[in-house]
Image (cartoon, rainbow, N blue to C red; front, top):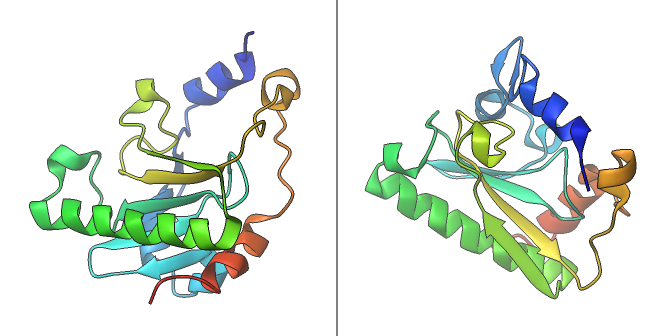
Amino acid sequence: MWAGWRADYLASPGFGRTDHGCVLCRLVDATDDAEALVLERTELTFTVMNLYPYGSGHVMVAPSRHVAGPLECTDEENRAIADAQLRAVRAVTDAYAPEGINLGANLGRAAGAGVPDHLHVHVVPRWSGDTNFMTTLVETRVIPESPAVGYERLRAVWPR
């Protein structure tokens, strides 16, 4: 299988950025969390719905500070990111009852990071048989709900 569309995306000049700078830094500065789909903010982190999800309930945890990876984070930031990941896993589990969860970060462009210069950790609920060839063959993902619906679903169970 070959996904040539992915190579074009990775090679594009705006990869991970907009004309307004880092997409994740723009979320740090957002004033309307519901509009920005930010589920949680702490002093050092934020958790947001992924606008380009691999599946329903796909969220990302990121440090508020613009850093590319965990080696650039302070110990306190790394602990805060780990704690935010646990809260996200708890909420995703409560809201979706997945059979499994993908938890991880793509560090750097070569690893597939969509925003390679701002660390973010993906929390993706998974079910047996939920992968298919739609993405590879027709550049399409079949997801039964919008990120906005997922936001409301997760907000209802988010650990306080």
